[in-house]
Length: 112
Picture 1: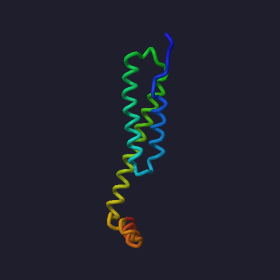
Picture 2: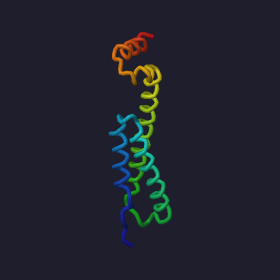
Picture 3: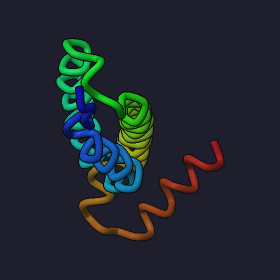
Picture 4: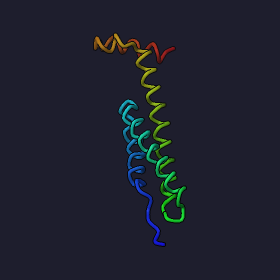
């Protein structure tokens, strides 16, 4: 029988790597990309488990899964970090765009 490559493996890798690269977009976009990649991993793994002898690139699928998990963890950590900074500085000081008030709150955080 002629072995073929698993579908979506390249897309999973691209989504996982993109989620890591885009983690600085407040974590939201990277979380979405990671979740999509993990959903594709789940479906592709089911396909592989039905007929493992038909496919050759299962190791690449596992690497894509690891990259997507790392991207998800990194994005969640950064989202929590951004939310903590937003909470510490205060939304009203950011919305007022008062640079002196923002600087004062940041100095209070650093010094405490």
